[in-house]
Image (tube, rainbow, N blue to C red; front, side, top):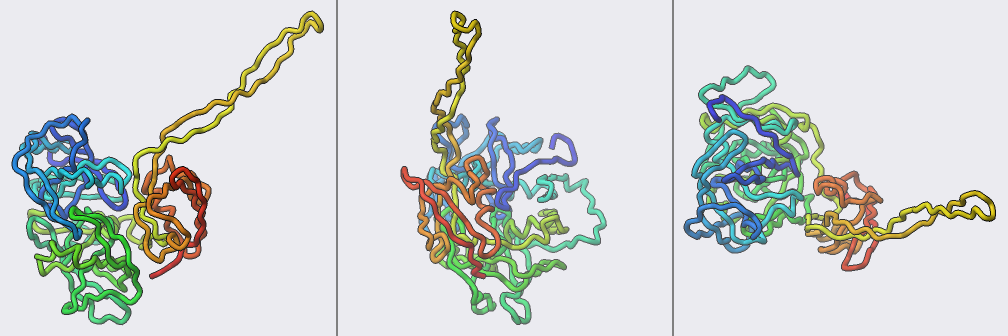
Length: 421
């Protein structure tokens, strides 16, 4: 940190995920800060990208998802910089498959993921409310007294942090079930739990099938539901969202048998979090998001940003023409002529990537590949993906009117949001 005791970094909070600016070998990029990742991962570069990086052997990576392992290259950067935090000769993996890209699902450029290397040498304070991270020199850091905080122990496996908490899955489920969860700032959901008959981790009666996300090894499907209560230290949440991923999608991570699931960004953002890897400790204090309701997408639409589309606008331009009729009247007459002209612009294309079965969107006739033009009369092409996705959430029975582009046809659809859980 250039001799300083701390460094501050601004980040963007997108869909509960932390996006930080990084610089690799002098090239500016954006990475996800993911506490659930050991080695940094970079997505395959486009042919026009100017980054030069030393590449070594080819390897196979396996992650969440039911697909096959993916091809990657083990590489080493000369410099990896976050603000004034400089790391030299950082080892990372470059994924060769250009189809694996988080940018489309978040609506902003994402060049890679970094985790353990940004946590291991510092005490890291993440302020979700202010969208700021502070990295402290652990030799100089002193914990302040904090009656509103709770300090909890961490355990580690493969350089990833785990925490012991408890959950009551359904009404009258006593006693609470103790679970060990990965602290996963790279997951946007609140909770993931892995089914386990022995530990009484069962899917609640109220549930629905859903697309949960995409991992390195493919799409992840499973069940969504709510837990009656989730306890982390002295803090408790009721009716928190929970996802139960399909067993095939988590086969790779289940080699750590003690793990029962994950805590994701929708829980973490409800706190100001201090990670202290050196002392195996985490400190939590409520943030402004603590009491926010746990909403879920009742429409059944999963969107992605699929590049740009061209729109044609017909505009009017007025010209004032002066005509002299002086021989007859000695005055000037003015005519206003309206001239039509075409204007072409590039706007964001928000595409339906997934539609949940038996959802209001499916029953209304919407399809994967449809491009959203407007929602309830509001044109979406200048909005962020976060904002558009938020418009698909709301109260039960809220009327949704969508105008979409399907091929070359503009179609209109209408449905009402339906509470499932």
